[in-house]
Image (cartoon, rainbow, N blue to C red; front, top):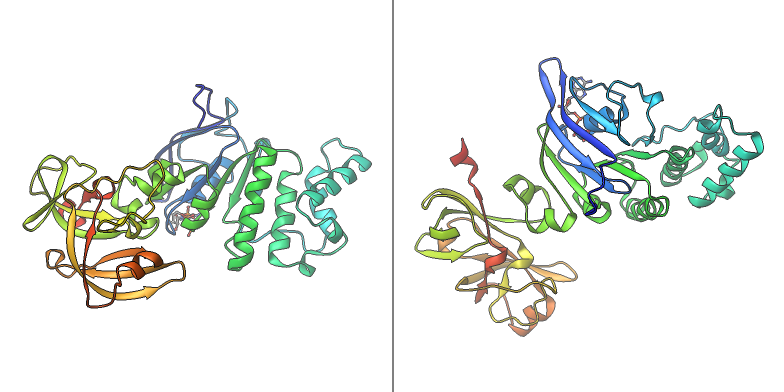
Length: 375
Ligand code: ATP
């Protein structure tokens, strides 16, 4: 998001979308700036695709407006809007060769045949498939077909690239490879891009900003690190990454209270005694006195008096770290999941059944409304 005060390239204002009585989008407002790669992230049915389709004009909103490049496009048909789109299902023409598929959108744009030929060759080079130009879509892998769909979508240099779950039909390895390619291409072209995904890892890896959605509303908008480290709601905290959630009560002055023990947290606005969920990420649970533990380099570890004696339960070796399940009487039936480095486990000789002290850093311990209490 630019700090220079420039206008958003895409401005979505108070958008509503009803399908009969069902509200798929409820008063969604969002600013997207030129050159950004934005991911709409959320569980199935939260309205991501509906929002993308409204931006494209493929579905018209029930209420609200969409401005693109300063122009009100709210009621324009897709053909009069400026975007390229890639769907999950590639949507290539099976009876046309790769080069003809890519050339498709370039015809009727006033370009001469040689110009079209040169542009197709440039686009196929960009996506690394120039040697496949005479083949038909069925002769290519899923990943290759999606690269062709991408080449086709950017052929006319649109101001906006819309990607609707472009990677979800592909297998895991191809997906990871292609997300790098898409990001690289997006950066090179500088094209404002909106991508729908339900894959949190994909959103964290690719997005400049993530828009987390739930039940037709935006829960939070932020950079991947903001969304991950300072989720605004329990839903966002839970949807992205692993998160310990321990029932607790709000303590005084932003503290959280587990029975008799009170710990300092990042802070909250709940009245003392209010039922809450205390939350902390597994990698933020630190073995007491562990200098080898690396948090963010610019991060001060504030442990204060948040030390806790626990019994080590099941330990799982996950390759680059150990996932340990820690038990404490104050947590009732909840267990605290902690990810410890291999070095820490070795140095502390951690083993199942052993006791240890962990710290829950103040600036990593969060407090959220407890769902039962909200009802
Ligand atoms: P998914 O990842 O499953 O595609 P999504 O977040 O993209 O989920 P949408 O496709 O935007 O969700 O759908 C949002 C809600 O609107 C869903 O409950 C869906 O059933 C409903 N919906 C979408 N399109 C229509 C339609 N044409 N008619 C009726 N209901 C629809």
